[in-house]
Image (cartoon, rainbow, N blue to C red; front, side, top):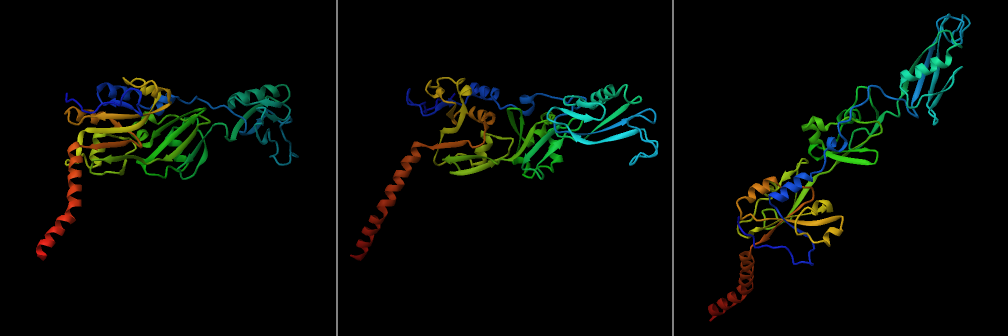
Length: 360
């Protein structure tokens, strides 16, 4: 192990948490990885049948076993065929009380029931009034069993869910599909008061992440280009560099930024700056109690690149969106800057002396 010359700030003066990138740190970060859609919501599977809800539109058709009943029409039956033994009740929406009206049966509670249960309730109400009645209930406009899709899609819409069960990508496809590039697209699922976000690439690469959608879910498709900033002694000082939505490692980020500048970088001066939640920072050793009073804490992850094992640690350390990678200048580079400045300032004087000698 190569000893680092860098050390944390003095006690009581910490503007940030100082964390060495080592095996323990990498294990803590791996345990605290953000949950996936399946990890957050579980593997919910749809029920075998959907229930009717307030706002749904229903159409009811009633049959009788013989002519001459409540819903039968003779030759003078108007808009139905002569001898018809059925009647179609006009479409109606389920009221706020969760009921619909069926002639001769009164108000029927339908909210929270399946179509088959409503059919049985109508038949029971008509028993003794109609001639061996039978009923058929059709949902003509489904409002309660829908999911809302919004954001970067071709056509934001409220999408009805089928009985077979629809997954996230199924519902987005019905809404016209996503418009942003795959590597910049994130999908948020809001269920009740909980929201989880995952990159689209995760759903495409891992089918288990393409979870079933529940009625009432809100799916938001976002275009979120992922970037990190590089400052200091690298080949791309001050650059904002995009990366794949699935993320990259510190090793790959250094490669994208042109690596450490050989003539001025300090291999022991590599830092990754970001804000971390308090529960995560609490697991790191030697963190000031004053910093732990905050909800989000600035953290400086330090890696000594003089140590050969640092390259393996850099391969395991994941870069996140809006991270800052800083590489400090070596002490010799600072001395070289001073020498170069002195040479630059003294150059006119030397040239003036040379010109004066030539003139003589």
